[in-house]
Length: 108
Image 1 (tube, rainbow, N blue to C red):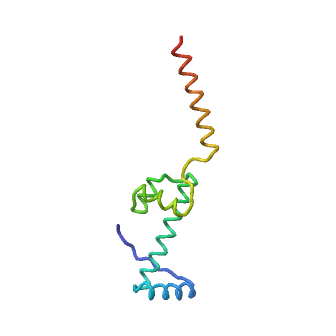
Image 2 (cartoon, one colour; image 1 turned 180 degrees about the vertical axis):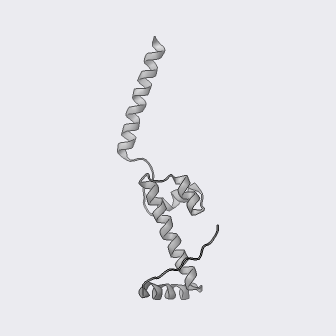
Image 3 (tube, helix red, strand yellow; image 1 turned 30 degrees about the vertical axis):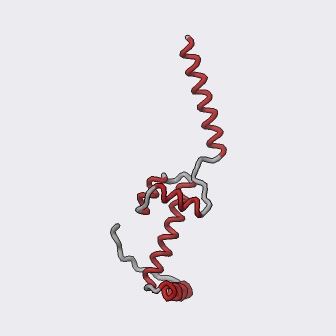
């Protein structure tokens, strides 16, 4: 994955928190900030999938993950990625209508 340098201003309290985290993880502050940014991006992408705004495969592509990783992240964050109850009900009704139409055309 390509990297891009982006200037970023963050509040001093978050900078202090990132410094503490970097000391605990024995890493540099920039790495901690990237980790935080990526975790937020994962959560945002999964929420977009849950809202039906992007597909799970596109979210996986954007995050450089597999589709299985996207579903794992959703599960870890208790975000439902499947259809809503209303969508399921409508799909079942539609399937019944299609099935009834198929039976009628085969009888004639």
